[in-house]
Image (cartoon, rainbow, N blue to C red; front, side, top):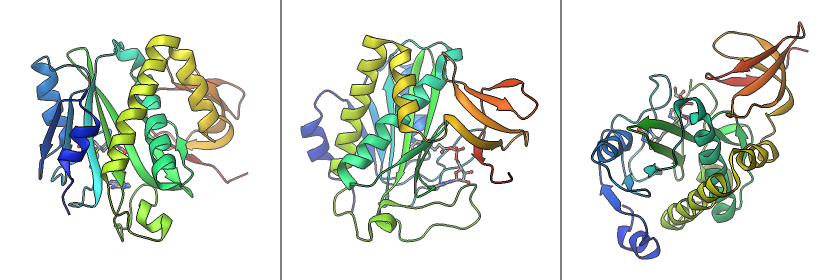
Length: 253
Ligand code: BT5
Protein backbone atom coordinates (compact mmCIF):
# COMPACT_ATOMS: atom_id res chain seq x y z
CA UNK A 1 0.00 0.00 0.00
CA UNK A 2 1.35 3.50 -0.79
CA UNK A 3 2.16 5.90 2.03
CA UNK A 4 -0.72 7.92 3.43
CA UNK A 5 0.77 11.31 2.68
CA UNK A 6 -2.11 13.22 4.25
CA UNK A 7 -1.44 11.74 7.69
CA UNK A 8 2.28 12.58 7.46
CA UNK A 9 1.54 16.16 6.35
CA UNK A 10 -1.04 16.58 9.12
CA UNK A 11 1.50 15.57 11.79
CA UNK A 12 4.39 17.48 10.26
CA UNK A 13 3.14 20.87 9.07
CA UNK A 14 6.65 22.26 9.61
CA UNK A 15 8.07 20.16 6.74
CA UNK A 16 7.42 20.93 3.05
CA UNK A 17 6.86 17.42 1.74
CA UNK A 18 7.35 16.42 -1.91
CA UNK A 19 6.01 12.92 -2.61
CA UNK A 20 6.75 10.60 -5.54
CA UNK A 21 5.21 7.18 -6.05
CA UNK A 22 8.32 6.30 -8.09
CA UNK A 23 11.49 8.30 -8.49
CA UNK A 24 15.08 7.66 -9.58
CA UNK A 25 16.56 8.83 -6.29
CA UNK A 26 15.15 11.15 -3.64
CA UNK A 27 18.72 12.52 -3.34
CA UNK A 28 18.62 13.88 -6.89
CA UNK A 29 15.24 15.55 -6.38
CA UNK A 30 16.27 16.97 -3.00
CA UNK A 31 19.55 18.19 -4.49
CA UNK A 32 17.57 20.14 -7.10
CA UNK A 33 15.43 21.68 -4.39
CA UNK A 34 18.57 22.65 -2.45
CA UNK A 35 19.96 24.36 -5.56
CA UNK A 36 16.68 26.26 -5.85
CA UNK A 37 17.13 27.47 -2.25
CA UNK A 38 14.39 25.35 -0.65
CA UNK A 39 14.10 25.83 3.08
CA UNK A 40 15.32 23.76 6.05
CA UNK A 41 13.11 20.73 6.60
CA UNK A 42 12.05 20.28 2.98
CA UNK A 43 11.44 16.55 2.46
CA UNK A 44 11.41 14.35 -0.62
CA UNK A 45 9.86 10.95 0.00
CA UNK A 46 9.08 8.11 -2.39
CA UNK A 47 7.35 4.75 -2.30
CA UNK A 48 9.89 3.36 -4.76
CA UNK A 49 13.33 4.32 -6.09
CA UNK A 50 14.58 2.96 -9.38
CA UNK A 51 18.18 4.21 -8.92
CA UNK A 52 18.57 4.60 -5.16
CA UNK A 53 22.10 5.61 -4.26
CA UNK A 54 24.48 4.67 -1.48
CA UNK A 55 27.97 5.96 -0.75
CA UNK A 56 30.93 5.84 -3.12
CA UNK A 57 28.83 5.12 -6.20
CA UNK A 58 27.00 2.19 -4.64
CA UNK A 59 23.29 1.57 -5.04
CA UNK A 60 20.43 1.27 -2.56
CA UNK A 61 17.81 -1.39 -3.27
CA UNK A 62 14.41 0.25 -2.84
CA UNK A 63 11.56 -2.24 -3.26
CA UNK A 64 8.21 -0.55 -3.96
CA UNK A 65 5.98 0.15 -0.94
CA UNK A 66 8.27 -1.87 1.34
CA UNK A 67 10.68 0.68 2.78
CA UNK A 68 11.17 4.32 3.65
CA UNK A 69 13.12 6.33 1.07
CA UNK A 70 13.49 9.89 2.21
CA UNK A 71 15.80 12.89 1.77
CA UNK A 72 15.56 16.02 3.88
CA UNK A 73 17.26 19.40 3.52
CA UNK A 74 19.11 20.52 6.64
CA UNK A 75 20.40 24.08 6.68
CA UNK A 76 22.89 23.47 9.47
CA UNK A 77 26.03 25.19 8.13
CA UNK A 78 28.48 22.29 8.17
CA UNK A 79 31.71 22.65 6.20
CA UNK A 80 32.72 19.71 3.98
CA UNK A 81 35.27 18.65 6.63
CA UNK A 82 32.49 18.37 9.19
CA UNK A 83 30.04 16.44 6.98
CA UNK A 84 30.66 13.16 8.90
CA UNK A 85 28.84 14.82 11.81
CA UNK A 86 25.71 14.85 9.66
CA UNK A 87 26.06 11.13 9.08
CA UNK A 88 26.31 10.54 12.84
CA UNK A 89 23.31 12.77 13.51
CA UNK A 90 21.23 10.92 10.92
CA UNK A 91 22.27 7.54 12.27
CA UNK A 92 21.22 8.57 15.77
CA UNK A 93 17.86 9.85 14.55
CA UNK A 94 17.18 6.73 12.48
CA UNK A 95 18.12 4.31 15.26
CA UNK A 96 15.98 6.18 17.79
CA UNK A 97 12.99 6.31 15.45
CA UNK A 98 13.22 2.57 14.79
CA UNK A 99 13.64 1.74 18.48
CA UNK A 100 10.70 3.93 19.42
CA UNK A 101 8.21 2.78 16.79
CA UNK A 102 9.23 -0.87 16.25
CA UNK A 103 10.67 -1.63 19.69
CA UNK A 104 13.79 -3.15 18.14
CA UNK A 105 17.22 -2.32 19.53
CA UNK A 106 19.67 -0.91 16.98
CA UNK A 107 23.41 -0.60 16.84
CA UNK A 108 25.05 2.07 14.66
CA UNK A 109 28.20 1.18 12.78
CA UNK A 110 30.36 4.15 11.89
CA UNK A 111 29.79 5.98 9.69
CA UNK A 112 26.32 5.21 8.39
CA UNK A 113 24.94 1.71 8.96
CA UNK A 114 22.02 0.98 11.26
CA UNK A 115 22.14 -2.63 12.33
CA UNK A 116 19.82 -5.03 14.11
CA UNK A 117 21.51 -8.24 15.24
CA UNK A 118 24.49 -7.21 13.08
CA UNK A 119 22.36 -7.04 9.94
CA UNK A 120 21.84 -3.81 8.03
CA UNK A 121 18.30 -2.49 8.36
CA UNK A 122 18.96 1.10 7.28
CA UNK A 123 21.59 3.37 5.78
CA UNK A 124 22.07 7.11 5.80
CA UNK A 125 23.81 9.38 3.33
CA UNK A 126 24.68 13.08 3.70
CA UNK A 127 25.56 15.18 0.65
CA UNK A 128 26.50 18.84 0.67
CA UNK A 129 24.73 20.84 -2.05
CA UNK A 130 25.22 24.58 -2.21
CA UNK A 131 25.98 24.74 1.52
CA UNK A 132 22.88 22.72 2.42
CA UNK A 133 23.05 19.19 3.86
CA UNK A 134 20.92 16.88 1.73
CA UNK A 135 20.32 14.00 4.13
CA UNK A 136 19.20 10.64 2.75
CA UNK A 137 17.72 7.84 4.83
CA UNK A 138 16.70 4.41 3.62
CA UNK A 139 14.98 1.98 6.01
CA UNK A 140 13.97 -1.59 5.18
CA UNK A 141 10.53 -2.00 6.69
CA UNK A 142 8.33 -4.70 5.15
CA UNK A 143 10.73 -6.59 2.89
CA UNK A 144 10.20 -10.31 3.41
CA UNK A 145 13.46 -11.28 1.74
CA UNK A 146 16.55 -9.42 0.61
CA UNK A 147 19.11 -10.21 -2.09
CA UNK A 148 22.19 -12.21 -1.15
CA UNK A 149 25.74 -10.99 -1.63
CA UNK A 150 25.34 -7.50 -0.15
CA UNK A 151 28.28 -5.99 1.75
CA UNK A 152 26.61 -6.60 5.11
CA UNK A 153 23.81 -9.15 5.49
CA UNK A 154 20.59 -7.11 5.18
CA UNK A 155 17.39 -7.32 7.15
CA UNK A 156 14.07 -5.50 7.56
CA UNK A 157 11.88 -4.52 10.49
CA UNK A 158 9.39 -7.16 9.39
CA UNK A 159 12.02 -9.90 9.35
CA UNK A 160 13.30 -8.85 12.78
CA UNK A 161 9.92 -8.42 14.44
CA UNK A 162 8.30 -11.43 12.81
CA UNK A 163 5.26 -9.53 11.59
CA UNK A 164 4.19 -7.02 8.99
CA UNK A 165 4.53 -3.37 9.99
CA UNK A 166 0.96 -2.25 9.29
CA UNK A 167 1.77 1.43 8.82
CA UNK A 168 5.00 3.09 7.73
CA UNK A 169 3.69 6.61 8.47
CA UNK A 170 4.37 6.60 12.27
CA UNK A 171 7.99 5.69 11.55
CA UNK A 172 8.33 8.53 9.02
CA UNK A 173 6.80 11.00 11.50
CA UNK A 174 9.04 9.83 14.36
CA UNK A 175 12.07 9.96 12.08
CA UNK A 176 11.36 13.61 11.21
CA UNK A 177 10.87 14.39 14.92
CA UNK A 178 14.17 12.72 15.81
CA UNK A 179 16.02 14.58 13.04
CA UNK A 180 14.68 17.83 14.55
CA UNK A 181 15.85 16.78 18.00
CA UNK A 182 19.39 15.91 16.95
CA UNK A 183 19.67 19.00 14.70
CA UNK A 184 18.70 21.18 17.66
CA UNK A 185 21.27 19.33 19.75
CA UNK A 186 23.98 20.03 17.16
CA UNK A 187 23.08 23.69 16.77
CA UNK A 188 22.35 24.34 20.46
CA UNK A 189 24.98 22.23 22.24
CA UNK A 190 27.64 21.89 19.56
CA UNK A 191 29.26 18.92 17.79
CA UNK A 192 30.51 17.41 21.07
CA UNK A 193 26.94 16.51 22.03
CA UNK A 194 26.45 14.51 18.81
CA UNK A 195 29.84 12.83 19.20
CA UNK A 196 28.98 11.84 22.78
CA UNK A 197 25.52 10.56 21.84
CA UNK A 198 26.94 8.53 18.96
CA UNK A 199 29.68 7.07 21.15
CA UNK A 200 27.02 5.93 23.62
CA UNK A 201 24.73 4.50 20.93
CA UNK A 202 27.33 2.63 18.89
CA UNK A 203 29.25 -0.48 19.91
CA UNK A 204 31.84 0.31 17.23
CA UNK A 205 33.36 3.60 18.37
CA UNK A 206 35.51 2.55 21.29
CA UNK A 207 37.58 -0.53 21.97
CA UNK A 208 36.27 -2.63 19.09
CA UNK A 209 38.53 -4.74 16.86
CA UNK A 210 37.77 -3.81 13.25
CA UNK A 211 39.10 -4.06 9.71
CA UNK A 212 38.84 -1.17 7.28
CA UNK A 213 37.26 -2.59 4.13
CA UNK A 214 39.02 -0.37 1.64
CA UNK A 215 42.59 -0.78 2.98
CA UNK A 216 42.44 -4.04 4.92
CA UNK A 217 44.04 -2.24 7.90
CA UNK A 218 43.24 -3.68 11.31
CA UNK A 219 43.14 -2.18 14.73
CA UNK A 220 41.08 -1.19 17.73
CA UNK A 221 38.72 1.77 17.59
CA UNK A 222 39.69 4.69 19.81
CA UNK A 223 36.83 7.17 19.59
CA UNK A 224 35.90 10.00 17.24
CA UNK A 225 37.74 13.21 16.42
CA UNK A 226 36.03 16.59 16.59
CA UNK A 227 34.66 16.24 13.03
CA UNK A 228 33.28 12.75 13.51
CA UNK A 229 36.15 10.86 11.88
CA UNK A 230 36.96 7.49 13.44
CA UNK A 231 40.27 7.03 15.26
CA UNK A 232 41.84 3.62 14.83
CA UNK A 233 44.75 2.36 16.94
CA UNK A 234 46.65 0.22 14.47
CA UNK A 235 48.42 -2.89 15.67
CA UNK A 236 51.82 -1.16 15.26
CA UNK A 237 50.72 1.50 17.75
CA UNK A 238 50.06 4.32 15.28
CA UNK A 239 46.73 6.14 15.38
CA UNK A 240 45.04 6.51 12.01
CA UNK A 241 42.11 8.78 11.27
CA UNK A 242 39.52 7.08 9.06
CA UNK A 243 37.69 9.72 7.08
CA UNK A 244 35.61 7.60 4.72
CA UNK A 245 35.06 3.97 3.90
CA UNK A 246 33.60 1.15 5.92
CA UNK A 247 34.61 -0.93 8.88
CA UNK A 248 33.63 -4.43 9.88
CA UNK A 249 34.35 -6.53 12.95
CA UNK A 250 37.73 -8.24 12.97
CA UNK A 251 37.50 -11.66 14.58
CA UNK A 252 41.01 -12.71 13.53
CA UNK A 253 42.53 -12.40 16.99
C1 BT5 B 1 24.19 3.56 2.44
O1 BT5 B 1 25.23 3.45 1.54
O2 BT5 B 1 23.93 2.78 3.32
C2 BT5 B 1 23.33 4.78 2.22
C3 BT5 B 1 21.94 4.42 1.81
C4 BT5 B 1 21.06 5.62 1.66
C5 BT5 B 1 19.77 5.28 0.97
C6 BT5 B 1 18.82 6.43 0.97
S1 BT5 B 1 17.24 5.96 0.43
C7 BT5 B 1 16.75 7.61 0.38
C8 BT5 B 1 17.91 8.36 -0.21
N1 BT5 B 1 17.83 8.33 -1.66
C9 BT5 B 1 18.84 7.63 -2.20
O3 BT5 B 1 18.99 7.43 -3.41
N2 BT5 B 1 19.65 7.19 -1.23
C10 BT5 B 1 19.21 7.60 0.09
P1 BT5 B 1 26.40 2.36 1.65
O4 BT5 B 1 27.00 2.36 3.01
O5 BT5 B 1 27.30 2.67 0.50
O6 BT5 B 1 25.66 1.00 1.45
C11 BT5 B 1 25.28 0.56 0.18
C12 BT5 B 1 25.53 -0.94 0.14
O7 BT5 B 1 24.58 -1.56 1.00
C13 BT5 B 1 25.29 -1.53 -1.24
O8 BT5 B 1 26.49 -1.58 -1.98
C14 BT5 B 1 24.77 -2.93 -0.91
O9 BT5 B 1 25.84 -3.84 -0.65
C15 BT5 B 1 24.03 -2.71 0.39
N3 BT5 B 1 22.59 -2.45 0.18
C16 BT5 B 1 21.96 -1.94 -0.92
N4 BT5 B 1 20.65 -1.81 -0.69
C17 BT5 B 1 20.43 -2.26 0.57
C18 BT5 B 1 19.28 -2.36 1.37
N5 BT5 B 1 18.06 -1.97 0.96
N6 BT5 B 1 19.43 -2.86 2.63
C19 BT5 B 1 20.64 -3.25 3.11
N7 BT5 B 1 21.78 -3.17 2.38
C20 BT5 B 1 21.67 -2.66 1.13
